[in-house]
Amino acid sequence: MKTLPIVALIGQTNAGKSSLLNRIARKNIAIVAREEGTTRDNVVATIDNSFILIDTAGLKDPSDDFEASIQEQIEDAIETADIILVTLDSSKYPDYRDKEITKKALKSKKPVLLVLNKSDLGEALQSEEFLSLGIKPSETFRTSATTGQGIKELKNLVLKLTSEQRGVRSLARRGLAREPRGDGSERRAPESDVSSKTNLKIALIGRPNVGKSSLFNSLGKKQQAIVSSRQGTTRDINRVNVKFNGQDLEILDTAGLRKPGKREVGIEKFSAIRSLAAIEESDVCALLIDATEPHSKLDQSLAGQIVDAGKGIIIVLTKSDLIEDSEKIDEILNDLERDYDFLPYAPVLITSSKTGKNVTKLFELACEIDQNRHQEIKTSELNKILNDAIASHIPAGLKNTKPKPKYMVQTDTCPPWFVVYGHDLGLLHWSWKRFLERKIREKYPLIGTPIAFSFRDVSSKDR
Image (cartoon, rainbow, N blue to C red; front, side):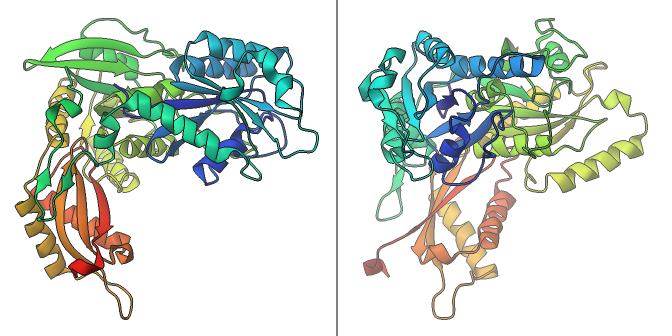
C-alpha cells in the first residue's frame, strides 16, 4: 500500500505547471522559463508530508522519439497517479490537445480537477469557455502561480481527497497516532487503526542498465523480467512473490531513471513515476549502484527520496564480477562511504547476478531492516539516552535563552519516530539533533532504517 498518494500535474507545454508546483511547494524545485518544453522530465515534490506532487513534461506533437517519450510520461502519470490535475493556460481557448489530455484523464476514473492557470492575466477567459472539456465547475479552479490566486483552495481540496485515500494510516505516518500523556507515558492507537501487512515488499531502485532486472531474475529464480543491455527496457513494475525463512516477500522491479535529455536548461533529473510509486509502496528499497559507474548524483537523489519516504534502504553494488582487482572494490567502497555520508546506517551489499554472489543475502538484510523499522523502545530507555546526551553535550542557545529538552517518547514505527518535549526547542541546532540520533543508534543500531524526530515545546506553566 502506498503511504503517500501521488498527484500529477498534466497539460500542454507553457501552461504554467512548473510555476504551479513551485507555488504549491513554496520553493523553487522545477525549472521555470518562458520557452515551451522546459520541463523534460518529471519533477517531484512532497507536499506537507501528505501527498507527492509531480510536474510532468508538457504534451507536444510526437515529431521525434524524444517528444513521443514525453507523451508516454503523461500516460504513465495518468495511470500511476491517484489524483490528476489537468492544467490549462486560461488565456487560451481549449484546443484538441487539451481535449485529448482531459479525455485520457477522465477515462482513468480517478479524481480529476481542472486548473485554469494564469487567471491573473487580463486576457484570461471565463470559466464557461472550458465547460466543453467535461469537468464540473465545482472541480474547476482558477489559479495564478504568480499571485497565489486559488492556490489555497486547490491545495485544500487535494488534501481532502488525499486524506480520504490515506485514511487513518496517515495519522500513524505523521507520528500522531500515539501521543504521550501528561505523565510521559504512551497512549497507543487501537491496533485496528493501523493496516496489517501481509508481506514484506522490497523494491529494486536504480538507473537504467544497472542490473535491476538481472537481480530480479536471480531473486525470483525465474525469467519473469526481460533482461536487455538496452537502457529503459523495464517500464512497468514487475513483481514476484517468494518465501524466505518462512516469511512472504514481494520483489518489485522498477523502471530505471530515464536517459538524461538536453542539458542546456540545467535540470537535475528525477526518477520515473513508476520508480517513485514503487518506493512509496515498498517497505525496504535496494538502491542498485553499478560497480563500473559508481559515481552518480542521480543515485544520491534517489537515496534522498527513499529516506524522505521513510523506507528501509540497502545500498547494493552490482556487477562486482566485472571488477577483478580487490583493491579497486575497496576504493569504490571508500568512495561510497564519502558520497553517502548522510546514510551511515545503510548497509552496503556487494553482489553479482552473474555469479550469484550475495544475492540471497539481500533477503536476510531486508528482513533484518524490516524488524528494525518496527523497533519500539521503552520511554524509560529513551529518557536515559536523552539525559546522557544532555550531560555529555549541553545544547547551545542564545545569550539569555537555551533549549531545554525534558523528555522523549516514541510515537510511531516504520520508521521509528521520536518526539522530544521541552522548552525553546526551536533553538536546537541541527548538529545536536544529529548527535541525539547517534546516541540512540549507539544503543539501538537500527541498521538500514531512517528515524524521524519531532521537537515540541511544552506550555510555560510546566516550566
